[in-house]
Each structure stands twice: as C-alpha cells, then as structure tokens.
Image 1 (tube, rainbow, N blue to C red):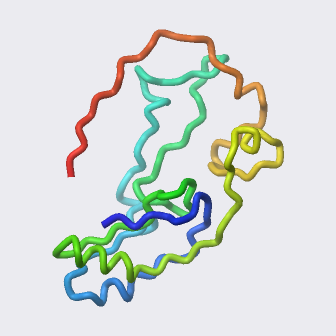
Image 2 (image 1 turned 120 degrees about the vertical axis):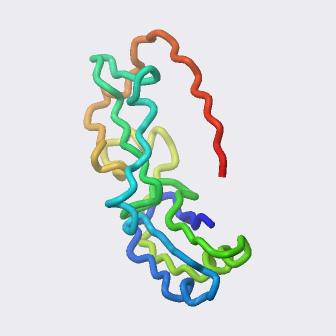
Image 3 (image 1 turned 60 degrees about the vertical axis):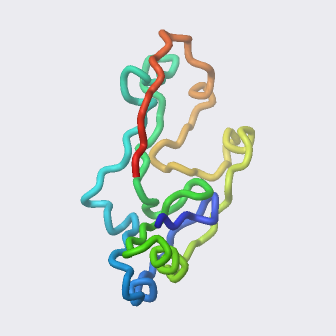
Length: 153
C-alpha cells in the first residue's frame, strides 16, 4: 500500500512506523530515507535520448530524477511518501492508516506566473532556474517516438 502526501509542497519532518508495525500482519514499512542508499531514483525521460528536451543553447532541459518515495520533502499532491507491506491488502490499508507522517507545510506554486516570479518558492533546489531566458520555447527538433510501456503490479 502506497502512502501518499496530502500536501502539494511540504517538508517531511518524520515518518513514524512504530504503531503500523505493531499490527501482526504488517511486514514492512519503508520511507524515502529507508531506501535512499539502495534504490536509485527514476531518471527523467526528458533528459534521456531519444526523447531528450533541449534548451535553445543545446543543453539538456533541467529536470531532476524522481525518487521512488519522497525524500526530505514532497513536491506534488499525492507524491508517494511510504510503502506498507502486509499479508493482505486490507491489513496494508490498516497499517497505512496507522503510519504517522509529520509534515511542515511549505508554500505551493499554483500557476505558471507564480512559478516564474523572481521570489517564487523553490521546489527542486538543485534545478533552480535563475534566468527567464531558460523558459523560452526551444527550437523544434525531430519528433521523438512515443514511449510504450506496460506497467504490472
């Protein structure tokens, strides 16, 4: 069972799984901090050929990799924060309800104009855009092939 953030932008202060793990059939609770050293983030497809998106100067569009589970903060409503594994779906749901995640709510960006303002909140610190010139449309390039994937559970 995936536990998702109820906030569009928040710092994750703590993930307390002690009560969830007291349920006899809950086998495991994982947070982003638990898997950060062993599970790599999902790489951005916009930075991977053949679907890479480039800026006007030819450099790759700034876009960070996406952690499997939020690490340190959430950046969108419903971002996965923790994973609860149990013997049954019902028990995993009960365990997820017992998981205590403490958030420090941060300002959310709700419009493009707000995102482009000089004093907007930084969502991805490692990709802060400092120049409005980075936001101009890139020169059209060869269209890329659509990505086809099958997701299985």
